[in-house]
Length: 122
Image 1 (cartoon, rainbow, N blue to C red):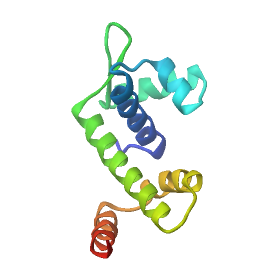
Image 2: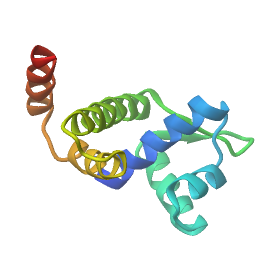
Image 3: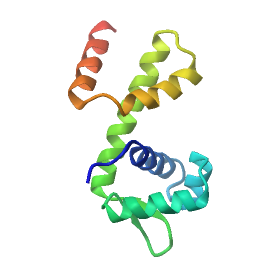
Image 4: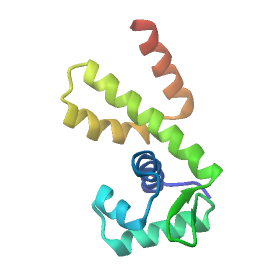
């Protein structure tokens, strides 16, 4: 099953929290993403069912290989687009918001071409 934008955002958030704290709990996602506990629990259950996450016995969340692959991809895109927009003079707040939107809406091929063109220019 193809993952949706929201699922990509959840996986990216799990990865970022893990880098910050080492362990990830649903309550960490509630704080980071600003969604209700029931919404987070529902999303986690779907991501677990689809093989992107594992909930350990101690209720911590762990990315599977499949989930880590998606999270890494989205984080790379997110970081790139935020930096790129800021280099164009976009404010950090707007770059963060719009970079998040762009990361989900370009194909792998288009992303690689944009990234290559940017690297040539700098």
